[in-house]
Length: 360
Image (cartoon, rainbow, N blue to C red; front, top):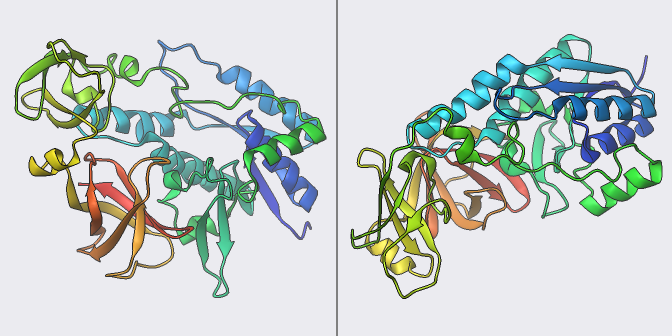
């Protein structure tokens, strides 16, 4: 029996997961490479078979078994359908969070354990740390430009007990260097971009296949029409593209979406340099209620100084937390922030991700 145990590695065909498999094999684990087959809409060109071939090449190079898990149904229901439904409601979903929760550390983890794995591993830039009391903490990856804990706030002790993040303690340059030194087949392959199942495809173009466009007004903070858009549901707060400003305005500063009304199909836009005006018009606020909360290693302390991210790699905001009824909490920020319903609000204690929730 292998003392280290058996680990199923999610091989995506990229360099991070490939190096993860390489490092685990060097450490003495029994490694199995697994390609996760996901859902893609018929109207998009899909490069999944190419990615699968790259994953197979890596498995062959490392001389490890290779499997394919067809999780298309889970992906379609829990990630794609969820995202479309949320946009229809005028909310701002995070499909990458749901991909991790329901697919990678949901269906993939469950199936791997059922097939005899002790652990699963992925190429995420995060660190799972075992504490003295046997519990686990989720720490930010050592490369701040690649840290992915924002997408992992739904993880629980039950899952972390079986998860390894082999590259979390490395920076991207080191990962690339290891891949080149080992002559991995994907060592020089570029990183993938975009939403998990769309790649680099424009999100609005995707959504227009499921949500009908509806022309509406773009308003300034005073309620004056200054332009138009093709449907308020397609926009999120803070966005600065996709709408048209046709009023004669002698100001070249960019406009950002600061409010939207789904029933009236209107957007309110403002210059980012007017926070006092936004606060005056109640377009941003200092406290928010979050639901579906998950606390990774115990409930947070009340009246304690934490920080929060409201978008991936966004600014960290000082905050405190008040726990409400089951799976809800109120987050108080030190200064006003602009946040949309449905967004993930993720809480940190320095480098430790303690959990989060979605804005009500």
